[in-house]
Image (cartoon, rainbow, N blue to C red; front, side):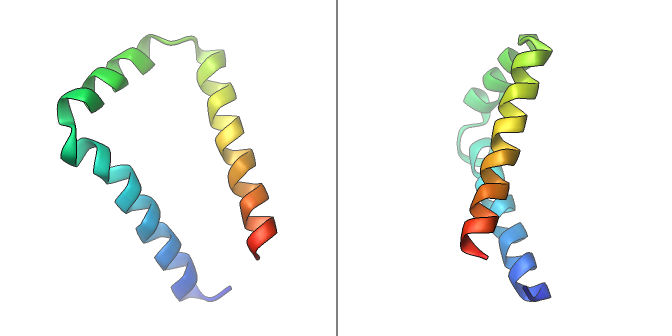
Length: 62
């Protein structure tokens, strides 16, 4: 994979991640407050699932 592809992937992630706070700041703030109250193991499982899904997608499409 070239450097340009990695930068495009990073740009897409930043666009998606920034859309929530940009368009729905109050909902995003409430979501973050609720997430902060959640159990650490739940947050860890969600993060692990997202990382696993990302790795699987990278393997499939590379």
